Picture 1 (cartoon, one colour):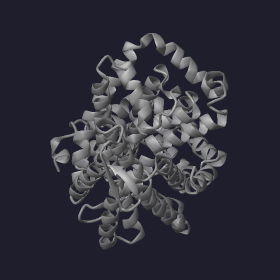
Picture 2 (tube, rainbow, N blue to C red):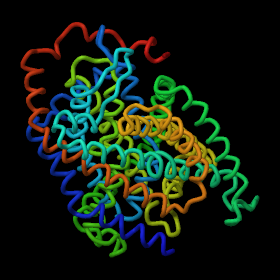
Picture 3 (spheres, rainbow, N blue to C red):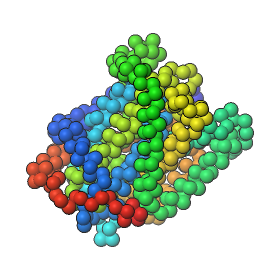
Picture 4 (cartoon, helix red, strand yellow):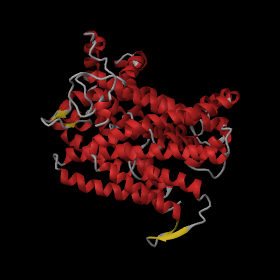
Length: 484
C-alpha cells in the first residue's frame, strides 16, 4: 500500500470510528422512537404518495421528480460496487449492519425531508433553495450559521472529490474496461503517469462530454433525465437480481445464516478472514450511508425543490428513497454475492465481485450477464454524477450568497473531475469518498438531534388534523413536471 493510501486510511478510520457510527445509529433510533416507528406504520402511504402530487403547491419540480433526483444520487455504484466492497471487507455480516442502519435511516431520511421543506427559501421567481444549511441556520438559530456553512463546504467536497465524481466514474470505467478489454491489451501513455487502457481513456472522454451536456440544463434537465433513467434501470436490475436469487433459492437459507452469524461472529463464517464485529459494522454502516445517504444531508437538498405545501408529506416521500435503495436494491446485491460465494474469491475487488456473482448465478452466457450488470452500473453511476452536481451547486450557492458565477466555475471543475476519476486507484477513491461522507454527516446529525422535537411536533399535528386524507392529493405525478 502506498504512503498516500496509508495516510487516507488512517484519516478514514478516525472519521468513521465508533463515535460517528454511534451518532448516526443513535440519531436514527431517537427519531424512530419519537416518531413511533413511522417508517413501518406509514410506509404504504409513503409509497402511494410517490405517484401523486399536490394541486397549486410551490416548488420547482414534482415530488416524484424530486425523489428521482435524490435516487439518482443514491442508486449508483454504492448499490453494486459499494455492497461488494462492504461484504468483501467485512464479510456477510456487513450486509446485516447495512440493513440495520437503513431501517433507522428511514426515520432520519423522513426527518431530513420534512425539515428541508419547512425551512426552505422560495424566491419570487420560483427558485427554491433548501437543505441542512437552511434548517441548521433557521431551525437551530443564527448562532449556528457557522455549522450550516461547514455542512455546505463538506457538501461541495463530497460532490467534487467523493460520491459525485471519482467513485462513480471509477466504477463505470472499471466495468466498461473489464468487459471490453479485461486484460488491458490496448494501451496508451497518458499524462506521463503510466499506461492506461484505450477503453478507459475513450470512456472517460465520452462520459465527461455527456455529463457536460446534461449539466448545462440545470435542475429541470437533471430531474427529467433521472425520472426516465432511474425507474427503468432500477426495475431492470431488480428483475435480474430476483431471477438470480430465484434460480439459487436452495442456497438462500444458508446465505441468510451466514449474514446473521457473520454480523455477530465473523470468524465463524470466514475462518478469521473477515476480522472482527467492528470491521463488519464499520463496513456495512459506512457503505450503507454511502448508498442511501440517510443522515448525510444530501437528499433534503432535492426534497426542498419539490412542489408541496406539506413538510410531512415530502418527508414520507423522501423516506421511500432509503427503503428502495438499501432495503431492496442493496439487499438483493448482497444476497447474490453471499449465496454465490463471490465474496470469498481471491483477488476480486469492487465491481468484479458483483460481476462474478451475476455470471455464476444467472443461466446466461457469462458475457451476457456481465453486460447487463455493466449497463446497470453505467446508468446508475451516471445519474449519481448528475444528482451530486446539483447537490454541490446548491451548497455552493448557499456559501456564496447566490453568486452563480462561482457555480459555473464549479461546474467546469466538476466535469474535469469526472474526466480524471478513472486514473485514481480504487482504494484511494473509496477512502476519499468515505472521509467526506463522514465529515458531511456530522453537522447534519447534530441538527437531527437538535430538531427532533420539531419533527415529532409537525408529524403529530399533520396526522391529528387528518391532512393525509385530503382529496387534493389525487392527481398522478404528471408529465408536465417530468417533461420540464
